[in-house]
Image 1 (cartoon, rainbow, N blue to C red):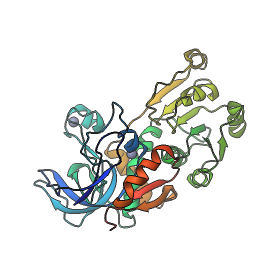
Image 2: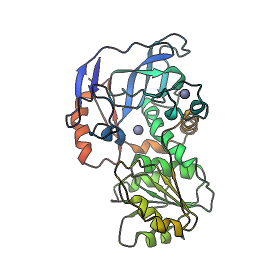
Image 3: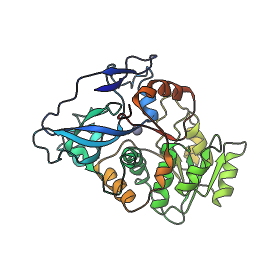
Length: 335
Ligand SMILES: [Zn+2]
Ligand SMILES: [Zn+2]
């Protein structure tokens, strides 16, 4: 089968002919029908300490059709599924707390940039009839924003500022509105994501300017009590502290991979809280699927181009430098 392999930092992905995966007990093989490209795929193949192993295929936002099952698996050949791309034991305290990323036996189940990949059957979810494989590939990024937003106290009085109009920011806005946040403004470097954040329910998109804190407060009718970092660029946490109101909560979802100085005194004066959130558990996948299945299909607006494996290496490298507001989908079955 064909697979896009991370060779080493600084080299483009290589399309290689590799062995078909074989399912161990508790696993299944899926034919990958869609796999979203995630900013973390770029950062985890960039020569950072968080790189994935060389010689493996990235891709963790996938959906597909079961083609083979191992022992002790209730999935059937032909089932349409998406899956949490994390292998875990299922029984330790972290797993019981629905935090599989914290499991002692955590292993990545990336590999979606391939015609076929392995999933942990316990971490797989059937796609409802009304949902496409493309919807299925959106579940992972949406589940990730869901987990973060679910940590917030929200109500009709909430004033929320979201930095970033890409997949994480847009996903956060979707969940903030689903969960009843009153007013939400998005902040981005350009107006390109304006249509997307509008579809997701944002009240306005502001571009970063001179008096950002003032503009945010004006748009929200007061300083925000919640600020979400959905961009992960250096400087945003400090901007969040500058614009947030007294006793506010900053939710960090962006995963900035560089040191990012803040002025703690300003956060102290505002008695602000900074919360971090990572990944997802089964409850986040389940809620995301149920929400999409109930007809809340706004996240479809996140999808941009769909490309085959042949196009992927060049596109992947271009995304390292260019900006990429929309989510690019890989269809490994394209010729
Ligand atoms: Zn991702
Ligand atoms: Zn565990």
